[in-house]
Length: 337
Image 1 (cartoon, helix red, strand yellow):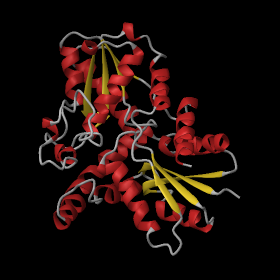
Image 2 (cartoon, rainbow, N blue to C red):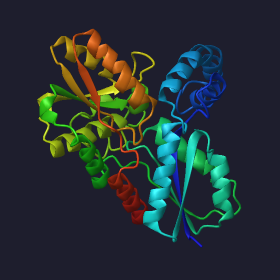
Image 3 (cartoon, rainbow, N blue to C red):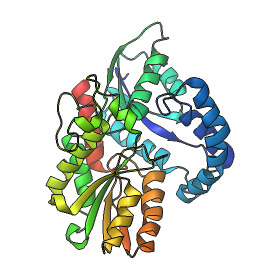
Image 4 (cartoon, helix red, strand yellow):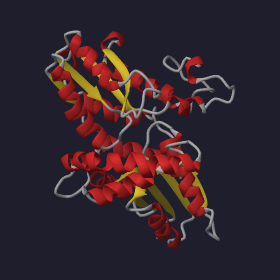
C-alpha cells in the first residue's frame, strides 16, 4: 500500500458548458473571500446579484468554444497528468486530482485520501506563482478540511514553483516549436490580479510598486505574484535567446482598471498599431490550456490584433501533459518525500 498521498489541485471548471453548471461554478469561485477580498455582505450582493447573473450567459458561450467531446480540457489534462505522474512515482505514492471549485471536489477527494491512512500527504496546487486567490485559497481549503480529521498525518505543501528548472525547461521546449526570429514581438501574458492583492504581500506597509518587482527577486518580494511572473519571464527569455527589447510582460483577464498593468489586450493592440504582423504569446501562469489561453489569447487576442493591422497571434501551447512537466512534478514530490 502507498505510504504517501499526493494531491494535485487545479482551479476548477464547470461540470458542463451549460448555463446552470457555469452559474454554479461562478458562484463558488467568485464568493471565495481570497478571490474577491471585500466584506462578506458586499461580496454576496456584488457576486450573486450583479456579476453572476450578467456574466453567466456570456461565460457559457465561451465555455462552449472551449469544450471538447471529452469535456473540459482542464479535467482531461489533469487526469492525464495524474496517470503519468503515478506511473513515474510508482507504488510508494498514490496520486489524486481535485479542483478548488466544483468537481472533483476537494472535500470528496480528501475524504478518499483520509480512508487510505497515508503517513504523509503532499499537496501541490498547480499554480507556478503564489497568489492568495489561487495557491493560497487551495492550501487554506485543504487545511480547513484536514483540520477536522482526528488523525492528521504529516502534511507538506508546495506553494510555488515558478523557478523550478524542469518547469522552465518544459515551457522552453514548447517555445522551441516556433522560430522566435519569425515573430515581431513576444508576449508573456499572465493572469491578472487586483493591485491590492500584491500590495498585501508586504509587511513593511509599502506597495508592490516600491519593491523593484519588475527587476529582481528579494526576501521581501519572493511571494509577490508580480515579481515572480517577471522572474519566470527572465528565465524563459534567457533560455530562448529573446532579447529584452523584443518581449513584453503583461497581465490578462482583468475585471477593472485597478489590476496589474500593463494589460495584455492593450499590449496586443499597441503592437499591431506599431506595425507588428506576427506575435508569439506565452502564458506561463497556466500549466494546462484553458479558457484564458485557448479562447482569450488564441481567439480574442487574434481578433484584436487583426482589427488594428496585425496578422497572427500564435499561442504557445501550455504544458498540459508534456513529459518534462511530469518530470518536474516528480522532482517536486520526491523533494518533499
